[in-house]
Image 1 (cartoon, one colour):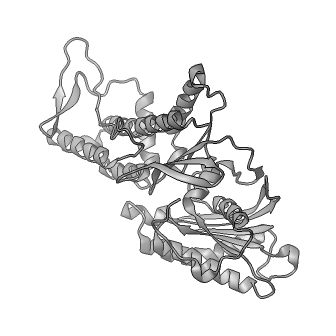
Image 2 (spheres, rainbow, N blue to C red):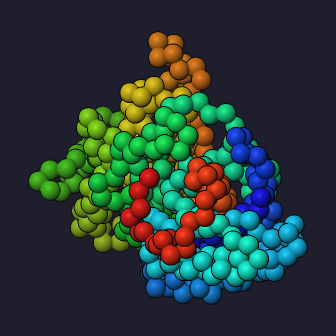
Image 3 (cartoon, rainbow, N blue to C red):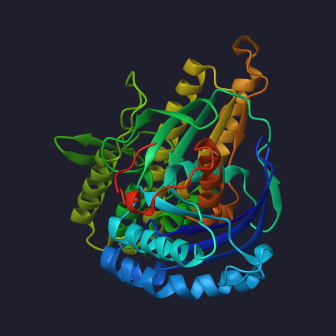
Length: 401
């Protein structure tokens, strides 16, 4: 079976063609994969501008389709049989609805065009399920969904989502925790704007944070910052001078649930910068100051994500941890998650020797159509290969697992 998948949930236009064999333990082969990024277009706005995203998807989809079919040695014509598409999968949500609709309408038109000789099944896919399954995918190789050890816990972290999803059986999802306000990736972008860094903010924040971790040169001499009366106050220390430490909150770290909140952390960074600028209006021109703020911000985010994930692993006796979504490419997050799972495996009393942690490849950590094709195939099988009526497929910006 050949699957054409379409992804337009945000600012990435993706079209892929996968060849799949088998149903119980299917083998996937990437015949072609095309992706167009809109980062440069949205960068002046400091975030994704929906109307522009829609316009770019409309422009890029026909171009990518032609390119992808050519790479896969296929044709727009429904004949011969070996050259035709058997299934179309398209992201229906969550995401920006204007962007989602472009992909859905495009997929519907293709299904109609290719159904002249026989009906082409059309499957709507949940974007977040795609991220979960992205950890098994390869960009240019064959891959198989190996035997999975349940329960599986997925931490999904991206610009629009931060949630913990429990899976006790394959494709049976339960959200056990999620952000109550800003997603982790969204907080990264907003803090980056405060630090006068370009969009997207995640890689820039991480670059500065890693720079601060590598540096052994003291930033400011003596003391630390404490929050008093709504302001950050410098507290000098007696004795040997030492590096200044900016202390930011770890939001909802010790709550009894698995929810997250990053809005307060973002506000704390805003107040920190404001208070520093009162003493020096040009403080953000100091690269070392910016690096130290970025480092403390990233530490706060990662520490919170790791702590909540660890508690969920312990409570539900998780055997497999999946970390996926755009923020999963963050090197510090990956390092700390691997460290945490290694420590849990080392505690014999927990009896978790098989605990493993899976990350997608860097190329497939962000939005892509390969993961949509995988999720679409499994949904197609679960629906007993029934065709979804095109008229029933709609964009759902707030779609949940």
